Structures are given as structure tokens and as C-alpha cells.
Image (cartoon, rainbow, N blue to C red; front, side):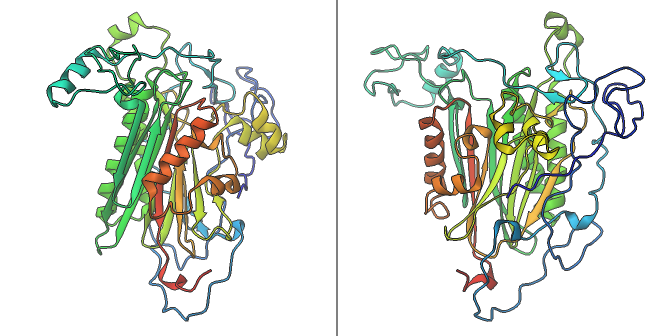
Amino acid sequence: MSQMPQQAAPAKCPSCAEPLESGDLFCGACGYDLSVVPAAPQDHPTLTMGAAGVGSSGVDWPPPEPESSGTPAAPHLPTDLPGTDSGGKQLPESPHGSPASPPPHGSPVSPASGVRFDRPPEPDEYPLQAPDPRVAASAAETTELPKVCVACRAGRVDDDGYCENCGHAQPRERDHMEQEAGPVAAVSDRGLRHHRNEDAFAVGHTALPDGTPASLAVVCDGVSSATRPDEASMAASRAAIEALLAALEQGTHPQQALHDAIVAASQAVNALAEEPPSAREHTPHQNAPACTIVASIVASGLLVVGWVGDSRVYWVPVDRGAPAARLTEDDSWAAQMVAAGLMSEAEAYADERAHAITGWLGADAYEVEPHTASFKPDRPGVVVVCSDGLWNYAETAEEMSEIVPADAAVRPLHAARVLVGHALDGGGHDNVTVALLPFPAPPQGAGSA
């Protein structure tokens, strides 16, 4: 599913905020070029859902499912997957949702277009870096088992993080991370070309006030051209998961909870830029930490997604005869070119500017506009939440469905490892992070194909 948002003309100049008229190519006040990249689309999630009603929060919990009649549910197409855009109402504006301050001098953000080019040229190889000796020494104090080299599997690792047998530098703790939380699992890897892992994830599970289980996952991708992108992604993922767990346990609707969690993550990343003026004197050309975010919740028969940036969520049914679907739309240069009808999808994503993002979390972001959407699949499946380090090697929903193991819903950690391995086998040009959330069979779908 690749329905792109409709193009919306900017109401104000992104540089001086001067009101604009439809068709303006340059700002009459400051002269900024408005035609470099189309204006960012508004948040109108792509699918419509025949919900039972809309409450004051913008969307109601689904009503209890009727008793199954034993009649199999009809198979659906990707565009038939039911979803809702918060009942057609705009979510309540957060007090933290006001536009952030303009980018500092030296920022990789184009002031005329609001596009961030976060893929600078990279060398063919990055040298491996040893872990902080203090961290290695601290870890050695907590265990008596000697560390074995990951390369030769025979040599002992010294306190400096190198193998005494082959001299291979050992990976740092964040270079490869794995976690399970109830039915959810996630894996993140540095990849084969980057010198550090700038991705981060958080997974969790809880219970709603009525005892219904809820599982959730957050994936954040640090903006490489920003300062401390690894810190930004970690701060965002932690803030988002904490906000989600607290909100769901209080009975907040998942879609509203996800919107608020993204705002909380944005504030956490913004806080990283609040450092003493004396620190900026020594690094005057550094820009604010930044990252993207994507998250998903599975609860009470709903599949809810939210995002800012170009990480994605895919739906892969257990029955591979049914169609898979992509549930998010990128905040990227390529997506805007396709939305504006200026390029085909193949042409846009083949362009070197394809991964220039138009939405991110950080103090130099023009405005944080969380995208949210909820869906109600009629059959069991698995939700794939991933950074572009994975989907670069399986871009379409069909390609993603082909590489997701058939038993992913019952062995999510194993499946996440397989998906990361697929990206590494494909070249591992970026950090790779994937989280998998099984979606159980809905009560009415007991007879579904």
C-alpha cells in the first residue's frame, strides 16, 4: 500500500514566516526559493475505517466483536485493510507542538525547503573502534568468565577491548543489541559500514485497565549529519516507551497515546541541545542532535502506528496467500517527489537525494507533526517495525513478506535475527534495527483464511 498524501501548498515562508499565495515560487519578503522541494504534506493518514463512533479524544475504542457466525471473512486487498485517521478530527494540539527554533549556522537543513540531507558521502570502510577501557574493566569486575574473541573464537580479550590472539577489536555493547518483552522482540546491529550504531529501540508489554494485553515497539534512527545522533535515538526511544506504557495503563486510546508519546520523544531530543553556552564556544559549528521515530501498538484488536521520518511499519499476515501492506509513508524527499507527481516511485528512490528527510525530531526541526493511523486486521499476522537499514533491502510490502520467516509470529526474536542477517548479507550499508509484534487472530476471524 503506497497511497501518498496529497500535495499541500505552504501557507508561510519557512524562513521568515511571510504569508504566501498559491503558486509563489519565491518569498516576496526574503527571496527564499520555494520550489526546491514541495511543501510537506499534512497528516491525513491514508486509509478510512468504518468506526462505530468518534469520541472527544478523536477516536473510540472498538466495540465488542459480535459472536462468530462461522462464516469465513472475505479476503481483502492491501487497500481494503481498515484504518482510521482519528475519526477525521485533528488530534488535540500539544503545548509542545509549536515550531522549534530555526536551524543554527552550519546545519544540514535547507532553509528554503525544510529538508535534511542526512546521508553524507561515506568512505568504503570505517575503522573499528575499541570500547571504552573503563567500561570493559567494569564489566570484567562483575563476571569471572573470560571474554572470548568474536572473530577467532579462541583468544582472550584484554582490558583494552582487543583479542590477545588475533588482535581483532571487539564490538561495543551497542553494536549489537537484542531484547524480548513478552510477545515482542527486537534486534539492532551496527551494520558493516558504519563506525557506530546510531539506531535505538524500545519494546514493552502491559495490560489495559480491563486486563486486555497490549504490546508495543519503538524504533529510532539517528540523523547521521547531526551531533550525537546515537544519544538522540536512545533518548527518544526511552521517552516514547515510558510515555506509552503510562498512558495505556491509564486507559488512553492507543492512537492518542502514540501521538503524545512522539511529542514526549521530541522534547527528550530537544533537551539534548540545551547545553551551557561555554560548551558551544568550543564547538560552534555543531548542530542539534536529531533522529527519526516509528512505533506500533497492538491492543484490543487494533494495530496502531505512528511516525516522524522515514522508518517504516509493515503488516505481514500469517497466511502468505493474503496481501502484505506498508502502513507508513516516508517523510522524505523521494516521497514528496512522488506525491507531487514529479517522479515515479522507482525514479525518486533511485535518486541520490531519496533519503533526504523532511521530518525529524530535534531542536532544529521546524515543526513536529506526528503521523498516526490505526488499523483493524481481520486475520493474524506480524507487525514489522524497522529502520531504513532493513527496508533498503526489502522495500515493497511484497518483498518484506518474502523475507519474514513463516513462524515469525511465534518466534519473533529468531525472525528479527533473520531479518537483520538479510540486511547484512545485502551489504549492511546502514545501521539495521527491526522489532516484531505478533498480531493475534481476532475473535471474529476464527474461520478466516
